[in-house]
Amino acid sequence: MANTQGNRRPRGLPIHPTDNGRWKLDTRAGGRGSRRIIKVFDRYEDAEKFYLGLRQRKQLGAFYEPEDVTLAEFFETYWEFHALPDLGENTRDAYKSAWNLHLRPRLGPYTLREITPGVVTEFKAQLKRSGTGAAVSKKAYAVLRSVLSYAVVRELVDFNAAKAIRPPRYDREREPHVFLPGAVEALRADVRPVSAILVSLLAYSGPRPEEALRLRVRDVGEEALFYDGRKTRRNRWTPLLSPLAQDIREWRLQSGRRGPNAPLLPAHDGGHWGTDDWRNWRRRTWQSWLGGDAKCAHQGEASCKCGARRLTPQGSRPRDLRSSYVTVQVYAGVPLTTIAKWCGTSVAMLDKHYAGVLANHSGERVPAEQQILEARAALSDRTRGTR
Image (tube, rainbow, N blue to C red; front, top):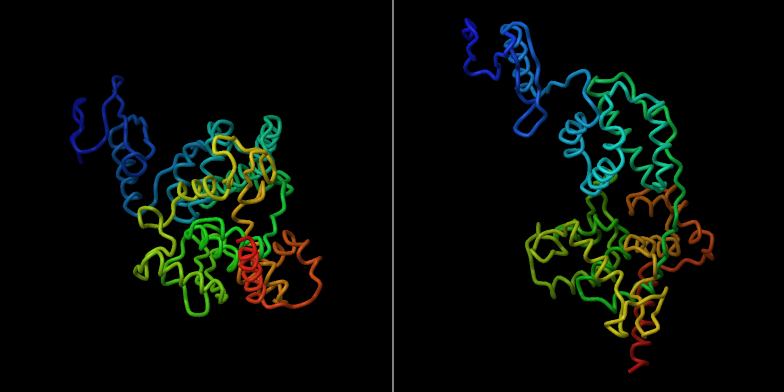
């Protein structure tokens, strides 16, 4: 044991004498940059015993957390040991935004045990009074519930106070725009090859955009596409329609051969698309205008008075292209259970978001590939007719 005679600073341990004869431990919960732990002891032996126990817990992977830890302090632990390893990149981005904008300013100073159902109810009321949208409020509530659930796992609180309160009500503000194959083909004809193949993947195999951008060359099989379903934690194989297979073959010949682990749709640096790449594509391509006066600001739902027209319908999103895949499969007579499996979703979600498609189906069955090929033939005929 280190020499404690006199009031000299011991060597090798982060324990320091104070002016009043006590001993202060100043260390960190984890590695560099983690939360600092500062405690004062009457005896050096007590400080040393506490520190050695803390060091042993670190070596075993169990980190010290004081009983009165605040939500802001615990969020660092939650982020390092739950969010980073277990949540997807898009989910983490949304959670971090909700935390910084709404949770940390309002609930960050509260200790975990101070966050009661009453505090959660007041938090919901604060969000409503501030004019926060329903979707954002529900996301903030989801983050709080997730953090408190992890606090229960770490045995810092006995129950999750957020579970006792009904989440903010959120009614979907918009229904997905339904892109039929004719609209998909017209869109593909107006964009560059990399955008055209992305549109084909989204419209004719039904992935979420982030799933399509994660595709590697080896994920394209002879009969099906392999999708990494991180959102649902279920990977899946989706049948490869022959028109899409042809689009992929043409794209690979045009873009150059790459190894099996290379991205099917490489970014400018050769890697997978990042968040900025996707955001830029949405702004510069999906929301772009065609023709007209380049100096005009362009206004209007479909066209501008200067003669320009929107590439895509106002308010639509790339994710809406999933509607094309759902639609062609419904019109082909494929059961909803099978479509849901291929899309990585549930029958309930299909029934909720595509009720109009289901209600307006005449019952006539036309194979999905035939629907796409007919749309391509019609576009080709129109193109020849305008020459």
